[in-house]
Image (cartoon, rainbow, N blue to C red; front, side, top):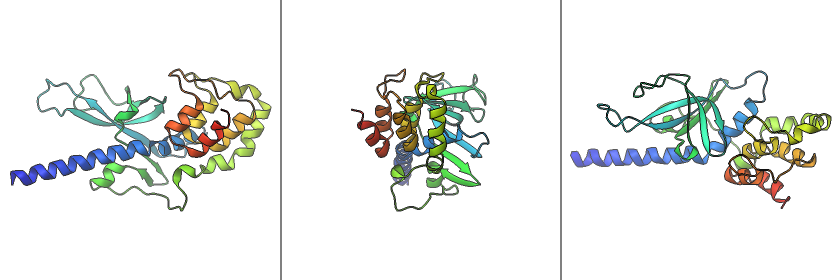
Length: 231
């Protein structure tokens, strides 16, 4: 019986690690959705969060090695995922819901967002018995599809860049350009239009990444193709 329990535990841990890897492999779709959510005047997502692990105090009695917590108001700088705790942690006396936290993208365990009651992502819950996440059916690879807002706003985006040409060269509070933001999110039409209006693809983020580096990292083939034409 002990051997059987050990095998089940090992199988469960392997499955858990596989879901963590799948979440990291598909994070780009979550980030693309958030890139458009942050542009909206009226929010379109009912919820968007990622799950990150945090090492607990080893001296705490009965404490697990890590506490796994959901984070909202998610930001991503190409290296770190950051945001605010959704709930009060059980094993961290100094942290409460709403506190700012961050972790390397390599620590990401899960992500999910909700639109009109439909859940996208949530791979861990799908594996361990929660309501399965929904996935849109398509014959085209997800990374090769344009986000609907990217398709629909092309003309308006083009007009905005003509009317406000300085926006092409703008750097936000984190030191990122619009081209870098859209390349990381796989927003192909904005990437193409920003280049058309003179966005400098050689500029780097504070961590040293170009727009092409970000598109490659996030595995957006069309954005990579558009930016490789600059080299």
